[in-house]
Length: 290
Image 1 (cartoon, rainbow, N blue to C red):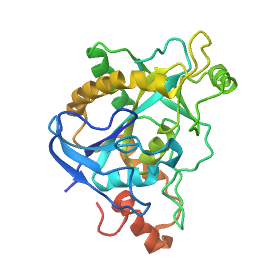
Image 2: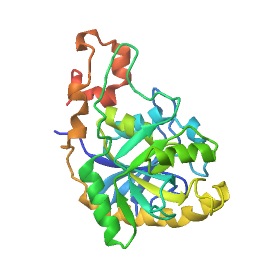
Image 3: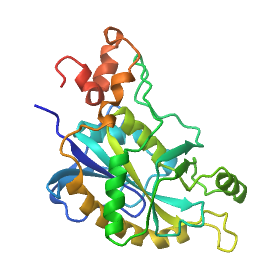
């Protein structure tokens, strides 16, 4: 029997719950990487099993650089999540992306000092990451958001900074001149770890501000960001409700076999403790797995 292909939603600033979930259960999960950001909420939506995780915890308690990314993605994968939608607040680096627009990035650029991987401790894996986002998944979101009359932009590059402070004007100008489109503090780690966990992922980058490069507007502040968050959260919920029924019932996209060509260490040399720690991710490679 094939593994279920459930759907995960990672909610960003302002998106702390998903409307329309039925038969809701709250699941506190312990992982080998510590606790996730919050309990994971499971339920039915659009005829599918959906699991929702508030990235910053309910009430927005966790800084971007404090997020337990490995625990979050491990927990979702342990529940059978094979498709994930990441909703994330971002600043715009280009005039054409206005607040409350939605960018569906295809590429990422890492300006952080962090390393995010499940591997190590005796198991080496290098996943292909040239195309971080699932193209068909992105297309479904674009079609459904456009059908709602919302302004979506398909493609573009998300530059990931450490934070938690917002950019200086010098940084913002450099990012613009390098051709980046939006800037955020959280999503690249999630996309990297989803690829290692063989989860197909697409990102909805919700514009809240113009960073600080646009000198005819006030520099970005937390107050300015959160002024747009409520409208963005509503738009995200409306899109997600239409996207869920269109997601395939089986995990058959290339991202779902990402580890076929990524695992370098001979299986006979895998430390048993490390392999067991990564069982939700490596299950099909282990004795008794799928």
